Length: 87
Image (cartoon, one colour):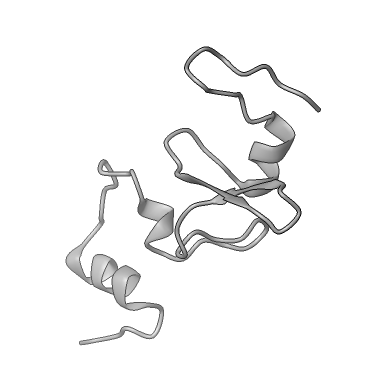
């Protein structure tokens, strides 16, 4: 699978690769060169979920400033985990 390089040095990441890595518009992408001289593309950041793995509760909200909380109790349970139960 080959893609043309633009005059700005950009290429399009094929959909199959974007889907496999779980990439969405705005996601950070890392590039590395392995010992064979091949470029390895990955999701940038150690907190990114691996493909097929559920993102953590904070990753689910990244970029979602319009999320509506039902109550403070619901919010605290969300950020502290399922074991939060304070009366």
